[in-house]
Image 1 (cartoon, rainbow, N blue to C red):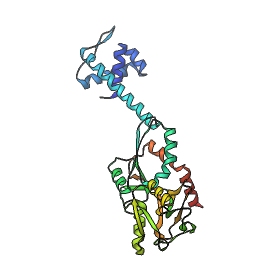
Image 2 (image 1 turned 90 degrees about the horizontal axis):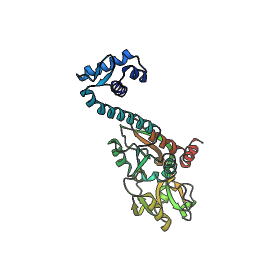
Image 3 (image 1 turned 90 degrees about the vertical axis):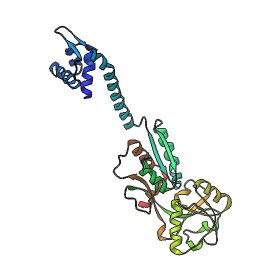
Image 4 (image 1 turned 120 degrees about the vertical axis):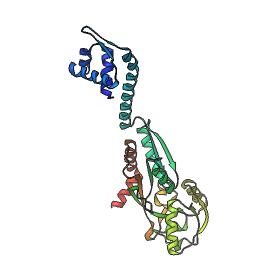
Length: 301
């Protein structure tokens, strides 16, 4: 049963005149009559009594009318909702974010929520592996993280900016005077590290294993904000991506001098999955943030 046929039926039921109904639908009367006849044949019943003077609904026509009206209204609502989604007037967006991307999110969320107040945002902060698994289960639209070292055949990584694993210290720390630091420079200083499973920790553990280096680790934390607070309050150092200190005036990021410390901030998406307009617009705004633009510019220089 075609929607066009139901619309013709409802128009005829309203007008009770095939000629006027045909004009309203901008078709010839013969075409309109044929459409009604085909609908009656499909349903196996007569919907209209026809005489030379008037048209009226049969009992079957009266029964069909409210269902036809509801069906047409539902189709129109569906069309309007799809248009609203395209224009970002409704809907939701599920975003996975690793803790290292916390600084990037502040500016993006503020601008996005101001531009699109009717889009509901569900932001999930978890380790990258958990976020990737949730995205592969279609629980998340995309993930913001550093490029994974492991191979995920179903995932595409879209580069946002370049970064480097760095030592994060207060400006009054003895380490702060270095332009770069080696792992050997760190062994005599106490550290508070991101928890195992977080991306910065994964990179650090790999290069520690490669160089057979052991650090003086006093504590581990699984969230960046309290980790930086502890560094500020105690004078310990931590190891994160250099972007972790954006907009933090009393701390500095000192790159670790090792080939394996290069990091790439990426948008992770599922291969072959349609990217909705809400996602595309969020990523566009993300790319316009001062942090991302600064790092793209620095990389291109």
